[in-house]
Amino acid sequence: MNSGSGQSCGAVIVLSGPSGVGKSTICKQILERVENVYLSISTTTRMKKIGEQDGVDYFFVSRDEFEKQKKAGNFLEYAEVFGNFYGTPRDKLEKALNEGKTVLLEIDVQGAQQVKKIIPDARMIFILPPEHKELKNRITGRGRDDEQDVKKRLAGADAEIAASEFFDYKVVNDKLENAVEEVLQIIKKEIGE
Ligand code: ADP
Ligand code: 5GP
Image (cartoon, rainbow, N blue to C red; front, side):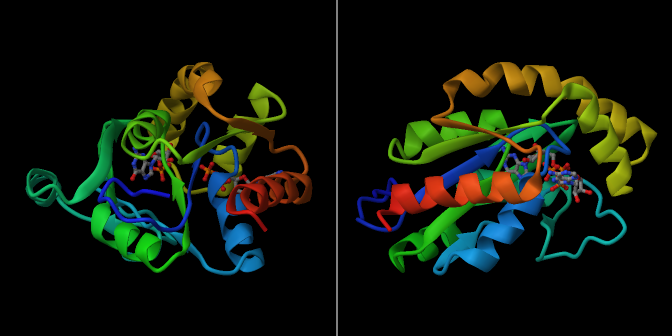
């Protein structure tokens, strides 16, 4: 695969889907089950929430710092999502690809579309909820977001789902084990295992 820097390297797999659908949960299980996978940690201007760790869940930065990194070309892609900025650090992704790793990106649909343009070989997976009302249960059940943030995330879900047509694969996250298995099979197929 070509990362856009002209070198031949590992595969890029993008996971997108509405907030609360289970993307992070699925990615964490994939990391435990597939070797040689690097899960990209995004940089964001949103506030760190209870239970989150800097450098683990995200790199939390100020708007000024984000802008500085953006201008320096440090992001492979970036987007404004729910009023905050999120970007994929380019250096860590390129390092992982050059080491032949499979890179997982858990990003929104705007970012996914940008990645597809830069890395046409990237494989795009969209995670869907079994039914719309389940999103609210999962977002509130996670206990991470305040009422305003829950509202913003639910309001954005329909537009995200409408963009799913552009993805190579769609996986419904009803029973978690089944969804993980499905994503696992897609990744294995794409990396030729
Ligand atoms: P996302 O990363 O897409 O925003 P998360 O992975 O944080 O979503 O999942 C949101 C909540 O839903 C978490 O509390 C998670 O444990 C739960 N969850 C994930 N998948 C399932 C599933 N298949 N069934 C029930 N709950 C799930
Ligand atoms: P949250 O604030 O709920 O963790 O994430 C909000 C949204 O931002 C989710 O859809 C998530 O996939 C997306 N996101 C996280 N990191 C990135 C990134 O680096 N780039 C883009 N474009 N979206 C991201």
